[in-house]
Image (cartoon, rainbow, N blue to C red; front, side, top):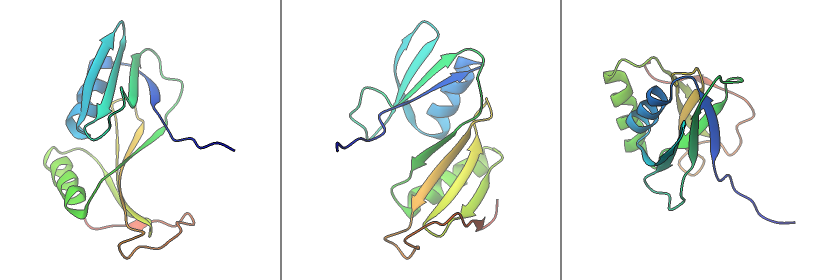
Length: 135
């Protein structure tokens, strides 16, 4: 067998500029390339050319995107920023991770995830979730 890892996600979005603004403002992704009705973005810690491609058009359905946060401090900073901006969001404790969920302008779910398996969290998720802290 061979090894794989997720390289990129390509989303079709209704309004390209609104989507680019959302992902660069709330997820700190960097715009690396534009061509036609497509923009390519990458996270600041990734040497890849891009991780997220956004193309303007009619979305075929909502998806969920997960972005890992490196520390509890990063999780709290993201939570504070999103709260300050007045963005509707949901906080969950999944045992293995804390999850801050919000939606992009096209209704796709974006989850900011703090993996807690090595920091007092459970080893397996098993589909369990409960509210966490104040939304």
